[in-house]
Amino acid sequence: MKIYKYSSFGNLLKYEENLTSKEIKDLIESNNLEGLRVSIDPISNIDKSKLKIFKDTTFLKALSWYVVYYDFDVDFEFLYNYSQLEKLHIQTLSNEVDFSRIPSKIIELDIPFNLEKLKNIKELKTLKKLGSTEFTEKDFSICSNFPDLDSLSLTCKKTKSLKGLSNLSKLVHLGLHGVNCTELGDLESLNKCTVLTISSFKKMRDISSICGLENLKYLEIDGCPNLVDFSSIAKLKNLEVLTIINCKNLSDIQFVRQMPNLKQLSTLGTTIINDCDTTPAEHVPVFFGSQHKKYNKQYPEKEIKEKLITSNTISQLTVLLPY
Image (cartoon, rainbow, N blue to C red; front, side, top):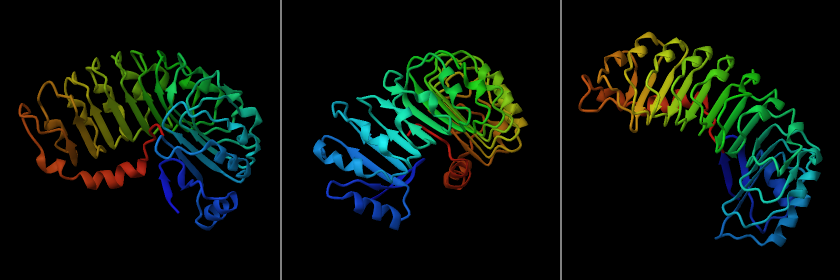
């Protein structure tokens, strides 16, 4: 038996073709697991006839369906008999799923976000965690249908506005990749948010609205080349970890002087502190990215403390990334 440790879904049993539905149930119960992980790739290449077994696994509370190639056509009608299912992850989706026909309450969902295939997804009023690596909506208005969301992690392909996020007052973890917006106005009301990751916001120029996230403890900004002024971050008095990656126009880090609770600062990748002054980070216990030869002061002793922060602070914050 192989246990698959899955970041959000907990511990899952790895599906093997020789297992019967009874054996799957017994293994899950005896090992206190949350559900089943099905992994299909060109090497394992599971015979489709073997998939009939899933009609008999209606006891599953969590199902992670990981397929690494798109021509493996799967009919997910067996889900319509899953009365206990709470967590569902489907990595590739070739056929539609009608959520109105799933008799259980879905709490966590990670799925390619194609509304032509996700029938009646708006009915998932109990949804608390939503993730997708293929979010194609122009904004986040669809998310307003899930008022209890506390975690949202989306990789966006066509999204140009943050509209709709302001309605998600219960959000605690938010991770967004690839949104083509210039400012963060729709985030300012998310005062329960403790973890925020924004990446590849290529047009981002203004983050002043971030001040409203007064309970933020972890902030990562990655791949925002047009962002120059980061001074608004100074108002996040509860922030403990700040990571600025691949933001080559960071003007300075003077704002860090006003952040007494900051435990870790990272300025890595293509990020360069343009005024070359690193002294504002003197009080920060761990500072990655201080080694550039042009900086007026370097902190090699702070960069060797990686395990101290990574294993404690960040693990406690549990940053939600796309599954």
